[in-house]
Length: 335
Ligand code: TRP
Image (cartoon, rainbow, N blue to C red; front, top):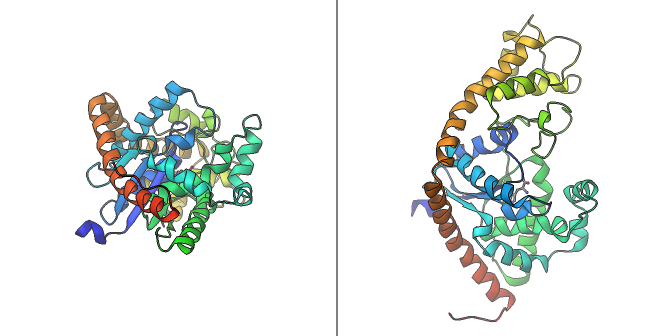
């Protein structure tokens, strides 16, 4: 009974690269905070990853790796539904149906499509264009009320909302119209080399800290992070984007405010500051890494979690999909 009164949260993360501290601070850590108050469904969206060419063995390993990371950061497979998108065929099926209610113009206008098309000009496949429709299917299948996302996914969520409204208007109420959920805490983590860009797992190695990076790698990457010539730890994202980004990371890892950090490092050079940022990250990531290692060694348990998650997800998703089939007039089936 209680779970029915809770609002539903859905979010997904792509297994297209190794997850970074940006994913940790901006997504995973917040996902955990939502587990008690909401009915949470968290998905490894492996089908989305196919929109750019992937090495099959790596993709397979990363799916397991992300699922293990979900649990290593403390997400509970009992409280939340943790699953892998491709294990629930309803996603691809609803995506097809929603494609028929989406205008090509709407998809061509998406900034992410334009960016990705420019970046992968030899592989501008149809999936790159219809990516947001699959994302809408992910969300709408679970009648999600709230969708935690980064600012870069706002446009995609807007499309999900429009599709839900469009469908509901054509066929009567079918989908919950989802809202974005933007956590108050959780700084936007930027690239260590180009602090005007978001930290991204698909950029070169030295621009991001992976959740699974070894301590010496973390220290080295921070040591090489771009700063400025002022030699003063001061929060000023406009004029000091590199240092401000390091401060945000330090703040996210320690809970200190920007003022406290400024006071803490007053009179100290960037060298000392950078090693403190590295130490703070290492301290937070170490328990996550050791739990991750333990889980990755227990394949049977990991597979069991994925299987049970997929079963629970499918039960919800298929209910919505059946409703949709009926509304649009697909041939009824009795099995
Ligand atoms: N497109 C999202 C991203 O790259 C991932 C995603 C896929 C997602 N389906 C989703 C996020 C559904 C939230 C809800 O970040």
